[in-house]
Every structure is written in C-alpha cells, then in structure tokens.
Amino acid sequence: QRKPGGEMAEVSADAALVAAIVDSGVDMFAFDWDMTITSVHCYNSRVQPEDVPGRWTSDIPDAEDFASVLNAIQAAGRHWCIVTFGQKDVVQAYLQQLGFEEDHCLICSPLGPGERYSQAKAPPKDKNDMLVDVVRLKGLPALDRLVLFDDDGRNVMAAQGAGFRAVTVDPGRGMSAPLFLEYLQRG
Image (cartoon, rainbow, N blue to C red):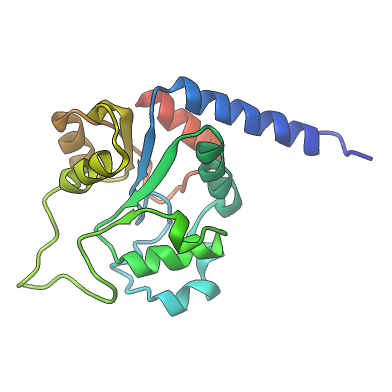
C-alpha cells in the first residue's frame, strides 16, 4: 500500500532529475566541497576524517537529497567528481557516510592526506588545472562538457574564462535536487 506522494512520486522525481541531466549536455559534474556541498568550511574548521561520523548530517544540508543527485548523475550515464582545495581524505569520509565508497569517487585536491597549506605550499589561484585533469582522465570531447558548481565566484569566472561551464552557488545551502536543477539551468 502506497502513501499519497510516496514511492511513485519519488520515482518520477528521480526520472525527471535523470532526464534533466541527460538534456543538459554535460558529461561531468564537478562540485566544490566546502560551502558548496557543506554548510561549514571543513578545511578552515580543521575537520578531520575521524570527526565526520559525528557531524556529517549537520554539515551537509539535505544530505540524502545530495546523494540522490549523485546517484541520478550515475543513472544518466554521466560522471561526477569533487574538486576542492581541501583535504581529500576528509571529503572521502563525508562521501562514505553518504554511501559512496572510495573506489567509486573521483576527488581532486592539491593536498595529500592530513596536509595543510603553509608558506611553502599555497593553494592554487583557481581550479582550472584540476578541471583539465578531470577532462583528460574521463576523455571528454570538449571543456564545455564539464560544469563546475562552486560558491567562490573567482573559481567560476576563471573556469568560464578557460572554456568550462560553471555556476556560482549560494554558499552553505548544500545541493538538494531542486537547487541542483536551478543551478543547472543557470549553467
């Protein structure tokens, strides 16, 4: 017995999401992490992988909905990745809580596990080198087959200037399915 607006509505919402992804002309969806997916800046807050199990539900707005976006991207035969200036092992810990194992996640970061920026190692000026690496790795036919979702307008402008599609997102709101669709229309 199904409740009104229950399982069938969820299936059609997922089908609509998959259809929008297919119709977008995008092959790779690149998400910034801190303040794009999360409501906190994990790197600046010094979140460690072992901290994530106790805090992930409060740090990722609409966490299950974000996981459904990632699953819909995969169901549409497209790819997703995380491009961050933060620590890859911290992002992986969050993704694991969302049900995505390490061997199914592409996370790009200039930092190694536990590494931090210092006078000897500054963050890159933008994410373009990481985005080019993703395009090459996935064999995308053109830069505009990738869209970057980022809360930092400087990264978005740099990506657009290099030929990528890119959208500035509202910082800290997360990536629910309705927000994803709204941002996708902008990009």
